[in-house]
Length: 453
Ligand code: UD1
Ligand code: CA
Image (cartoon, rainbow, N blue to C red; front, side):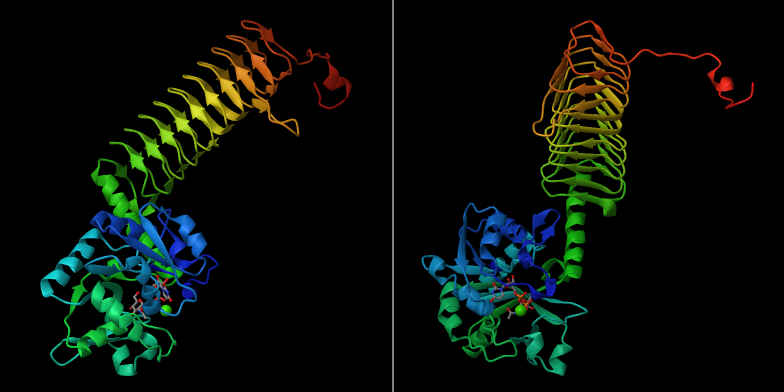
């Protein structure tokens, strides 16, 4: 798998193969596909920001070859020779920038290659706008004679819409005996891998071409427009699979779901929902419009209402979150709990059946079962240097507009009167009040002349 190039047309500091599609680096897709075909030895050729590329992909069972400097695709394959020395049989060559290629297509290529007894097989396709790609040149009998790169093609050749996809299967013996013979006398001064085709033809050896009928699957990504198109296609594949497993996606074009996400049966996904990373959603849930859920677990029958953001959190069954709630990392919400609008929760456990329905901040807290957190409650967890913990035991009632200055503990079934600032532990079963007593001054408004009567 070739992945050493810069990808100039991306106009990016990030190597092309690391641009993300449905949350995963582009390169991870062909890697996974090749593994699923059962190919045993996989070599990725890296060069430009090679360490960054290496760090970004799952490395088990993968070897890396360095290509420095990058002198073209032919040169790139040459750099893998050492690692492929003791292999027998055929070598499949793919590009890291062709992420949509499927297992079936690779199997077709391998089958075709075997059947036709070719030394080299490759996949071509026809596209309405062939600009930028290598064109497949054929003779009068329609046999392939060579591939000419866009920059080297004459006007006549440029009109040809059959292009090289850069996906090859080559006999090892043919590959490594001919790669060294490739010259770089061309418009880009590069060693072109597709030159192998003309070489095979001249040597009278068999070249076979698999003409692929859906160009969108086999076309490489060279710029951000193509990246967006490939992302759309990948999104469609992921969403189709999810829908076929029994999940309703109201508008599949507006559901952004990463590949590893799992969703249970009868869950409904509203438009503009982002489900990312390793998120797992249970059965019969409703994820409303505009929610973003990252690396989190949501139990069965839970409802995440409009515009809620949930990260690295675990949510139980029959829970209601939002609208407009923010659950930050290490939040645990147990079954039947409710988190309402404008509530932010961080590193906090919310017990079974507990409610925090309005305008609240809960950070670094352990909250028991069936607790009522009144509107405007704030855990004051930070003293400017350290974070401190708030503990609220089962059945406690926190009146509205309470500040809990941590570290502090509210005992079982205790009550806190509204508007209190709690700085000392509250024993179980007691009432805590820390507001000053109310004074009423009779006739004050009239005396001041503010209003008549
Ligand atoms: C290449 C083919 C072209 C084909 C097209 C299909 C050549 C010369 N041309 O062109 O016929 O139509 O793919 O997408 O092969 N790479 C390296 N080392 C290098 C150069 C490139 O590893 O020195 C890698 C790149 O990272 C990339 C892949 O090879 O993953 C293809 O390189 P790119 O420059 O995009 O090739 P194209 O010009 O698109
Ligand atoms: Ca190029």
